[in-house]
Amino acid sequence: MTIGAIYLGGDRCDFSLWGPTLDQVTLEILTPEPQSHPLKQDDGGYWRASLDSIPPGTHYQYRLNGDRLRPDPMSYFQPQGVHGPSAVVDHGAFSWQDESWRGIPLEESIMYELHIGTFTPAGTFEAAISRLRDLTALGITTIEIMPVAQFPGQHNWGYDGAYPFAVQNSYGGPDGLKALVNAAHQQGLAVILDGVYNHFGPEGNYSRDFGPYFTDKYQTPWGGAINFDDAYSHGVRQFVIENALYWLREYHVDGLRLDAIHAIYDGGAKHILGELSDRLAEFNQTASYPRYLIAESDLNDVRIIRPRSENGLGMDAQWSDDFHHSLHTLLTGEQQGYYEDFGSCQQLATAWRDSFVYQWTYSPHRKRFHGSDARDRPPAQFVICNQNHDQIGNRMLGERLSQLVSFEALKLAAAATLLNPAIPLLFMGEEYGEDAPFLYFIDHQDPNLVEAVRQGRKREFEAFHASGTPPDAASLETVNTSTLNWQKRDSGHHHILLNFYHHLIERRNNNPAIRLGDRQQIQPQYNNESRWFSVHQSQANHSIWVIFNFSDSPIQSPQVPTQTWTKTLDSSDPIWQGSGPTAPQTLKGSESIKVPPLTVVLYET
Image (cartoon, rainbow, N blue to C red; front, side):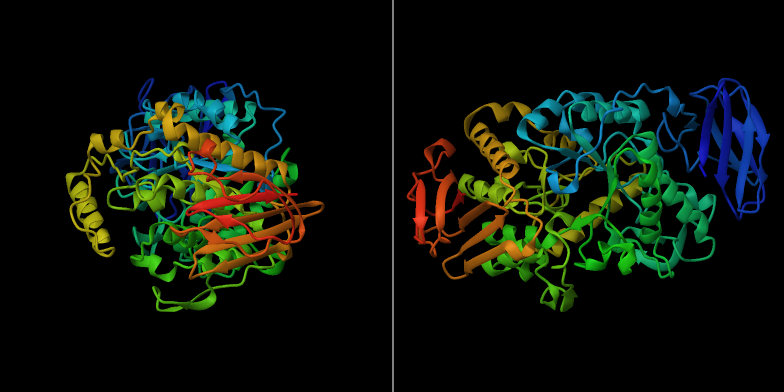
């Protein structure tokens, strides 16, 4: 089944609209010539019509119950924004050139999160294409794009999307996104798209006028929850499943990152994510390569990634916030908000080995027990990072890690992320120490909504005991300030850090012991008082031993595992702008080494 305005070729188009509680629906064709066509409702609550003389680009809206005129909630394109008419799209017209593309296995992925609007000064899909070679040269395998579904105005993080099927007009619309995916595949990059199924944006979303898309049974941080288990929920579930498959089918994306699934509420016998997983499995049976579902969640719930045969939701991977929080607190010393649950080398060791620190253990911040044991799932089912759009942008001043810690600490963060067996994710600009902030921004047209956002942000930061006023989310200056400064990567410490990241990725790719799949081969050690952490990993005939000194003083390491070791990275080396190494180039037997302050040393066999 497909929904929306389905262009069939020859200027013929099928229109399908879900509106189970409506009494009357009229399709209003606005261009090229005005026409009105009453629709008929079927037993499933869908209103349908099949029309001739509807060329691609035709503008249309629906008149509901003879009164309200609304855009199509299943619109494929909103050329005039969220309040304007919908447009017919010919998805078959694009000339794809990725027939030989066969995807990137998750266990080989190195992800790079980017926001189209601030990734380049132009802020478009076309401009992003010009930077793909920089990412492949670095060693990135997968770009993860923040939401591109149509949002109000020209600038937004993307989580205020009002039309889940429509590609943002200011970014370049449907053809722009297809061109980006096409170019990425031709350059060996997979594309993960951010899908938002926990809420709709507050402006320009008229879905309530069409049917019961929402339920009052639950509340999310953004308002009423999407209706996945109340009356008429079958239509909403179909809407979401069709949307997910639409991105895979029509835009050739390699997978979806599902935003904040802990706010997707479904008390039915078959959770919507489980049903989506089943439908993806059907899709993959006839696809030329597998597509993936990756869940963002702070629940530490292993059932999210357990197979459907084991009563799990069947997601292919999920976030591990515990790794970020453990690393961030060691580097910054911050203890506000949820960071109060973290801060020790022991916790970083646990996150490295087990993915979750909280495994049904007591969380002081939550004041309850939290999490589950995920040790039976491979590390490649977990995505980790040392910063991302949330962890940066939800700070009042949007500071990146480069603004919070020293250059030596940035190298520690990079090594901890890229030498970990989980799937590493970088946030755009991290690789060269971008120091521009990534601030929260909007472009709502409703002044009351703008003011509500301002006040809401202020209240949010009060919980983190932040003083002052957040930068104006509705200001164009906030967007411009958040845009990457690509020229910085070519000089000074920025260029050194870029080379450091490149070297780490080379080590990761060349040694299977780094991206191993067997948790039993992860042997961490730590000392909370001296603030060091080390780990020994083996895979087949390959091994690594890496030690991190998070303290401001030199430390003496524990004995290195008995093998012949060659040092392949030392962040204190002058080539990395370090103060000078103290660890020898080779080690034989079980020796101990001296590690300078804020230094990471990697040995390999």
